[in-house]
Amino acid sequence: MMDPLIVGLISVVCISIGLLVGLLLQNILPAHHLEEASKDTVKIGAGMLATLTALVLGLLVSSAKSSFDAMNTAIASAGAKIIMFDRTLANYGPEANEVRHQLRQTVAGAIDRIWSSKKTSPGGLRAAESGTGVETIQMKLNELTPKNKAQEQLLAQAHQVANDVAQTRLTSIEEQQNVLPSIFVIFLIFWLVILFFSFGLFAPRNATVLALLFFCSLSVSSAIFIVLEMNRPLDGVIKASNAPLHKALELIDK
Image (cartoon, rainbow, N blue to C red):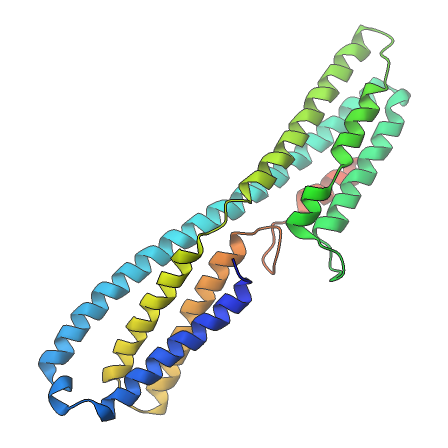
């Protein structure tokens, strides 16, 4: 899938071309092609196409919103588990301080990498895929030797929470591999081009109508941009919130 901004710009250009072609054909087509009977037929076809386009676009927006919400839920769940993991280590005793320190470094590093503002670093999903902090923490947990039953239970609980965090991370990464098929976007833009062509074919040729139709094309193209952006919640302009991880970072070691 191409960059959402590029796809949005291509959409605006294609729809605008369709609109302009329709306006130009007003002077080329024979008069009987633009009579009321022809106009009514085109209106019926345009109405059917507009309904189909609105239905598909609505479904895509809903799907993108679900994907975006799922990532936000996963981040919030990971933040809660990180806090619980830290509390478990605190109850274990000072022997687990090194693991808690590693936990803080891992969370801070994940925030810096995934939500990085530096253009030189990969950031986003690629940074999440390359992270190994959870595995390091699990290795350090294996180095702890419980001295009593209470510590054994706490260590087992810590292992379980660490495994849950690792599974949440891997599940979120795998879910992001389900990208929106390009054919959906191509057909959607094609339908919009035909729709705006029909608008231009019978639209009055004045500045008000042209400006309105252009802003309409810009609006539907921005909807396509938003759909593509929300389908990749760790990349691009519209990103999932890292506030739960920041809150977890504040509470670690306290």
